[in-house]
Image 1 (cartoon, rainbow, N blue to C red):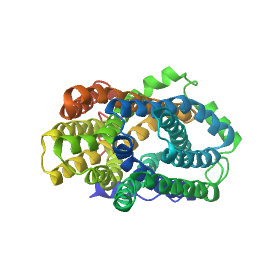
Image 2 (image 1 turned 90 degrees about the vertical axis):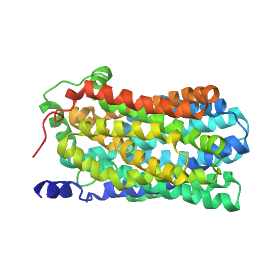
Image 3 (image 1 turned 135 degrees about the horizontal axis):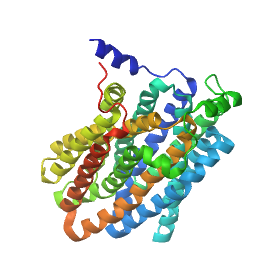
Image 4 (image 1 turned 60 degrees about the vertical axis):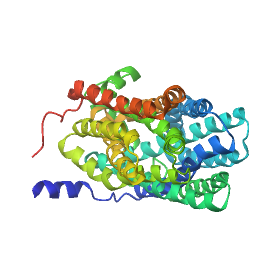
Amino acid sequence: MRGQIAIADRMRFPTDKNIRAVYLVMLVLGLAYGMSVGVLPIHLDRTLQFSKIEIGQLAAFFAGGLIVSSMPTGSLVARFGAKRVLTFALAGYGVSLIAMSFARTFPEVAAVRAVDGIASVSVWVAAETLLLERGEAAEKAVVMSFYALALALGYVFGPLNAYLVSRFFPAAAAFPISAALSFLAAGLAATKLDDLEEGPNAKTSHEKEIALLVTNEPARGYFAIFRRIKTSAIATLTYGAFQSSVVLFLPIFLERERSIAIEHTMYVPAFFAAGMLLFSNYASSLGDKYGHLRLMILFAIIGCVMIGLFPFIRWFPLMCFDVFIAGAALASLSPLALALQGLVVNEHELGRANAIYNALYATGILLGPVVASQIFEHFRGTAMLLSLSAIWAFYAVFAWLNSADDPRYRSVTP
């Protein structure tokens, strides 16, 4: 009973108005993401008639934008504040969506995808920096889980909206609608957020200097920080490779090899996000209580099994259930990984740790579709899905071998 009360206490909705404003912004952005992601494979495959290899290469341009801008974004946040970077990045994402409606050739779409990557990672770094700065130490996991849930809600309803649009308009019509949502999110960020240095929870310059002076360890370089956060960093690398590959190629697999109408495949990311939506917050609270890495290993195993079973399921409702369970497990990894990262680095290292985290996520997005497209092209979709299952098995073993990275892994709190 006491354990249930403790978990319920950790699940309280944050009261800081800026944290709540970020959630609202990310909810609106999630709708834009969900709509655009839902139609992107259809647009590239059916409308523009790109091959699977070309679709994988286009994902590499998106990831390239993420990688080249991840580290500089951290500097921009420090220089101009999270609010300004977040606002301009959201507007930039809207511009990229409008441009996607007009892009037709491979170079044009590649350029748009690169801008999409630059804008997206700028949104993530700015939003996560604001949340980690303002969230109390004891509630960082819950703060980040609500952040993930806000995006998940958008991913649930975004693809459904995309399906409705596709019934009456060409698939590309979803892009300007998504752009309007992104511009709305930018307006909300500009009007409802304080600057990072303002607000009741912001630290004064003197407090920041004291925080640097009292730390037990000197500032570390990027490689030293990576060694400290490697279980979180490799988790996001794996998730980036998995997520980007599934988003691009699972709809094509279902249509080509399972004869499922392409319009119905839009439901798949919605079920994945719904699993996260219903379980992620509770998973984060369990991670706070029992150790984040312990749950990350368990969820990686569950994800491995669900993805490995998927190509052998023929009934579409059961496929959706499989994806729902996979989403509950794998999509819950992100807030757990960020919370673990916040525990094992000093506060003044969070910015660099977050830059590493997002850079590796981008690297996964870069490598995943390139490799998956080759496997899909030469060995069909079943082999591709089994390879994605295998990377989660690898991560579970890697995390278990490095379980000492989580100071609470071997001790369970009563």
